Image 1 (cartoon, one colour):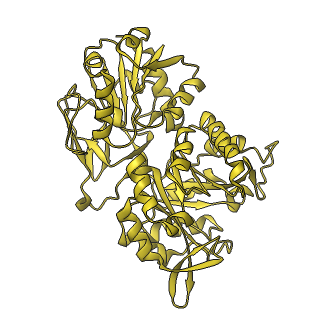
Image 2 (cartoon, rainbow over the protein chains, first blue to last red; image 1 turned 30 degrees about the horizontal axis):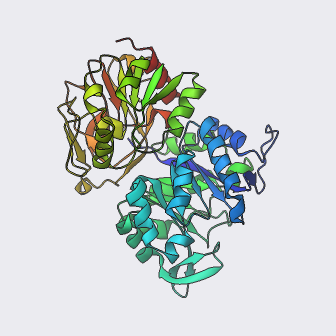
Image 3 (tube, rainbow over the protein chains, first blue to last red; image 1 turned 30 degrees about the vertical axis):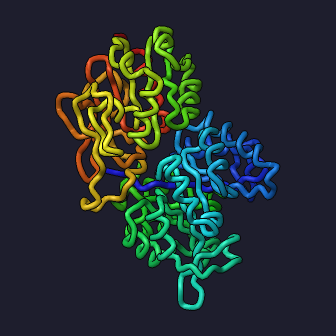
Length: 251
Length: 197
């Protein structure tokens, strides 16, 4: 049976992991390779790196980091952030990334999804969507939720599937950072409207939240950052718990 | 030493990285003459099967590969290339295995691509030596190889039961990505490297 995936998300800047990673036994919490290896060891099924490097000049550093991660990691990983062309994506593919995630660039230029899918296959293209409930609708937001668009989340995701997105990473900005649980209503609705895998993101606080999202919605994976980074939830414990609830996981 | 068929279908960095971690020596196969340099051959592949086949044909390696007596391992699209035909691009493949590569059926209420870790049920085979049955391997594909008891050495369920691994004489192939399947995948690559013709 296909397992539900648990995905830690790491923010990287200039080739280093940033934002409060607090592993006691890690000498250098900024080393993406060491962190990635640790997560793989703990049973993470996949990793997502979000590149928040501001300047284009530093993209080479990101490529080097992706290579370093690919050399050591024996599980798949996705890299997102700042990818706006087939050339950007190809460099990351050749550096060993299994998937790339695109967000704002796809909203600005939906044809990018199609171009990427044609060039590298749909399995390579993850569409990341930041959504926020605004004026009675779930609207796609850019710039980490600060910039609202007029695009309805469900409409955009359906369109992206048609264009060739192979997977959706849906982050609820309303739930992100609250630790009050995933947006199960929206995730359920989205899963019913498309036929590609969906990764739930935003709101994980407890293991019960993961059980909830996997039992109440059709999502294929759940992503979280701080609960894993700060050791609030240990991946082996989480998987045991999910297993107890009859949710298929890789133990 | 392992030779990797270098025909331009997808990225091989992950595969070469896995071989490096396992301290297995490898090199690239660009021409027919290169095939003689290696004891084992891997045919990788990601992306569109029809396009991959065209690229492989352009290298002139199809016939020499078919004649090989040494162990060959096809991975993912590299597996599909060994079949007779793929629905992806309605393309004729190498026809080493008289099998069909088919598109998953949406009507089965499954998401396509089949992406993630799935349990592999294998038969007694050198490739899976030391791996526990029902271990999960990492899959990512929209087309699959029909189950056929003659060639099947491992099955997996996703809407249908299909072949996760097949073998015919010296030709082995896996639909999942051993280079991305954790310790079990690494063991499988190691096992392949020790298979003798």
